[in-house]
Length: 426
Image: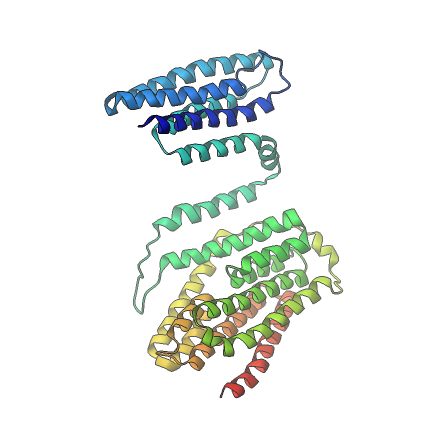
């Protein structure tokens, strides 16, 4: 290692120690001099000491480097922990934060000499950030409920533990079932419900429902509909407000289809764009009407969501959507060109984006522009019908009536615009 590289690494080791030391020094700034274990200087020297030990380990070579690093770290940790223990006795506190921070500083200083500088610096920034968020984290832990924590852990496990081990290859005939795809649907459904729960908790009923619907609509308006339908059935929020969330998510879904078509095959826009633009206007109009219109259920807006999401209901619905995808694929393969529209309609019950991408790539060959456009619009219409069914079966009551009114109006507006557009194109 040349002298310039070595000096730059020592500078990073010193800098990361200073960074963590500034945070620790600020936390104990009111303590008298000599009454605290470590401050800015001690942490800066700890980082430099770790860097020095890392440089010595490199000089020794691979044979004794690991032993030297381990011995040095153990000696430093022992001395630092003794002083932290005495500080705790003098102040009557019980905390290992300073001791752990010192060990991390020493280890990062050593890594700055033997490893990647960017990773060492990033880890130091992350460490200082976590240390600085003490009050925020403690306040968050005090306010979080067990259902929230449990649901967050389940969602994290679904995403980072189960998803990576899910097989990506299809299982079964007719293209099979992609278990990873089904599980992704379950994650999206659970995520939409969880985001909605948090949004309502922190932003209030009206803003929370609409913000969650807008965020969920970017991923799956079907997930938003299923989540809001369950909320409506449980009496969590007014039917109008929850239906407004479905309208916002639907409008974003329509716009998302137009964006995908514009990016992959702009030739389809002439038939797809105007009807979906009309549907967007109708959906947004209904949302505005329900949010700002007269509501005779204002007291229900004070009801909070009681459960972020139900695991088994989410998994069961994901399996149902996965089965619909397989049925749509079978119809598409069995019925040929005509089956493209029928299959798209069946697939659209679960996933409009996949149909849009597929049809955009199939035009102008083997499908013509008209067939591909009609298939996309059929998928959108069937997806709206699916939302209506979810509202009727799960949400019921006035929520179902509101979603039905919006869905039928959006489909009617799209059809009314599509008819003259088709006549003009022909």
